[in-house]
Length: 157
Picture (cartoon, rainbow, N blue to C red):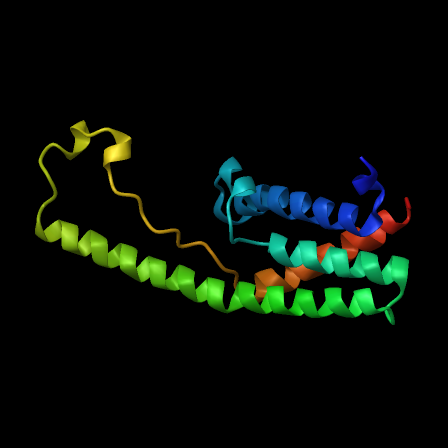
């Protein structure tokens, strides 16, 4: 359990859990929909990836100093991760949405099998995952979440 004595790791893990759990009340406020499954899904506000890497980087900056080599490594890693969350992963999610729409349209031409409702769930097709990436605002608030959690937790280390 010495791993949890490591402040940057604790900050990063706390930021992940917090960012994932806080998605539930945010969805309730915005869409009036209770979705506990959001705690275990990708995408959404705030970005847990951004929260994790910024908490890790901030924790390293607090404990090792911002002029340390390990901080530089974490800082660059954070930028790459956050860029990826808004770039490649977001584009993959948008492509999945288009492909899912094409599949639905294609299936409507064939009017689907008449016994569709009688099939077991595992026999039905699975949709591609659309909520992979983040909008820039989600990454921004994920980053703020991580920095805030790291500074908050630093008071206890």
